[in-house]
Length: 123
Image (cartoon, rainbow, N blue to C red; front, side, top):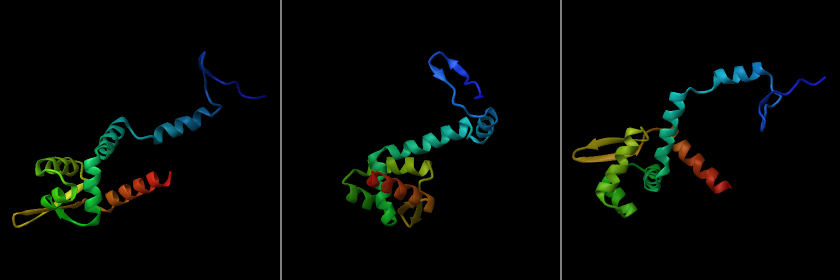
């Protein structure tokens, strides 16, 4: 005989999963703090200017002036976006004399960017 299906409310019926399976899954889920941190990190990718900066930095290390020319934007706007990207550890900076050069923080950022781009172009 089939197991009875639990009714959550009159409109929702529980799936016929074992309670132990769900409990096991629950213990492996990320905690609320981690999911909030991850959501904030992904929000950084929601700005088109930041994505264009990342795309440029994917090609090579650049200074703020180069980014202003490439993206046809003011220095203040570029600097603001770079600060956001730096705070989220998406880009890093290197100072050479008076010039500050920016690059992607590490290859994980490059992989995430390229995989997302591939996913968008795929579908």
